[in-house]
Length: 362
Ligand SMILES: NC(=O)c1ccc[n+]([C@@H]2O[C@H](COP(=O)([O-])OP(=O)(O)OC[C@H]3O[C@@H](n4cnc5c(N)ncnc54)[C@H](O)[C@@H]3O)[C@@H](O)[C@H]2O)c1
Ligand SMILES: [Zn+2]
Ligand SMILES: [Zn+2]
Image 1 (cartoon, rainbow, N blue to C red):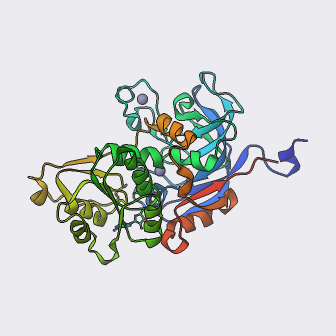
Image 2: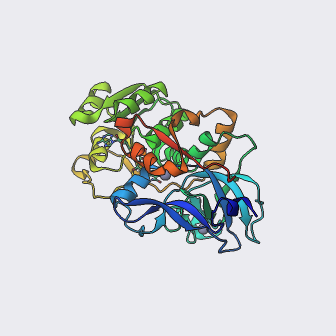
Image 3: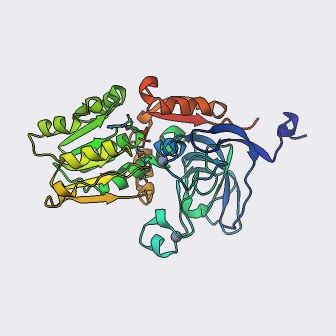
C-alpha cells in the first residue's frame, strides 16, 4: 500500500485555494492536474505566496476570471512529470515558476512581450488553475520554469515569480530611472518595495515611498528609501512637492491600482518625467491632460513580461539582491485562508509578503 492510500488520501485529488466570485474563497479538494499538452509539466508546489493582484481578483477588479479558478501565480516546487516535448526539465528537478507562460515563437514573444504571448501570457491563477495548491500544470514548461540549485532559499526565490520582475520591468525600467533621479513610489506593498529594490540598481539620488501604512513605510526606510510620506491625510502630493522644493519627481511609480494613487503620480511628476503604472486598476482614472499636455511626460503601462527573471535570479542567488527581507509571515498550505486574511489586512497585521509552505507528502 502506498503512503497516500495508507493515509486515506485519494492520489488523484489535492487541496487547493479556489475563487468562487467576489470575496469568496474556499480551501477544498480538487482533482490533481494532468498533462494536457506535450510541452506541459506538472509541478508539486513546495512554496507559494499571495500577490496584491490576488486581492484585486477578490474585489472583482479582474473580470475575466471565472468562479472555480484555483488562484496563485507565484511558486517554487519539484517537477513530478513532464510532457514528451519538454526538453530541459525532468521529474525531480527543483524549479522556480514564472507567472508568465510563453510559446517563445509568436510575434509578441519574438518582441520580448511574453505577457501578451498569443498562446500564453499571464495564465496561472487567471485563465488556468494556479499555484495556491498542492500541484499545478505549467504550460510551456521549458520557458515558464527555471532550475533552482539544490539548497536554494525558496522564500527568496519565490519573490522572482512575480514581484521582482514586476518592480523592475513595470516600475524601474518603464520609468527610465537614471543616476541622480528623484523617484517616488506610491504603494509600499511587496510590489512597490520590489520597485524600490530594483530602482536602486540605477542609482537614484532620492527614493520617496508613499503609503497609508506606517509599518510598510518603516520597512521601506530599512530597505534604503531616503524619504517616506504617509498619504492618509490626502496631502501626499503637497508633501512630495515640498520635499522636492517644488521640482517634482523624475519618476513616479504607481504600485497600488487605485485612482487616488494614480492622482498622486500625476500631481508630482516633473516636466520631462515618467509615470510608470504598475497597479492593476478596476476603475477608470481621470487623466489630467489639462495639466500634463505641455509637461513632456511619458506614461507607461505594462503587464510584467518576466524577461528579466534570469538576470534577477542570478542577483538573488549571488546575494546582490536580498529578496528574503520582504517576507513577514509564514503559513502552511492548510492555513491559506488565514494567510489571505493577514495579507488583506496588512496594516493591522504588520504584513509585507506572506509565505505559504506545502510540506512534502509523507
Ligand atoms: N502590472 C503587473 O504586471 C503587476 C504584477 C503584479 C502586481 N501588480 C499590481 O501591483 C499593485 C501592488 O501589488 P502589492 O502586492 O504590493 O499589493 P498590496 O495590496 O500588498 O499593496 C498595495 C499598497 O498600497 C497602499 N495604498 C492603498 N491606497 C493607497 C493610497 N491612496 N496612497 C498610497 N498607498 C496606498 C496599501 O496600503 C498597500 O501597502 C497591485 O495593484 C497589483 O495588482 C501588477
Ligand atoms: Zn503577482
Ligand atoms: Zn508566444
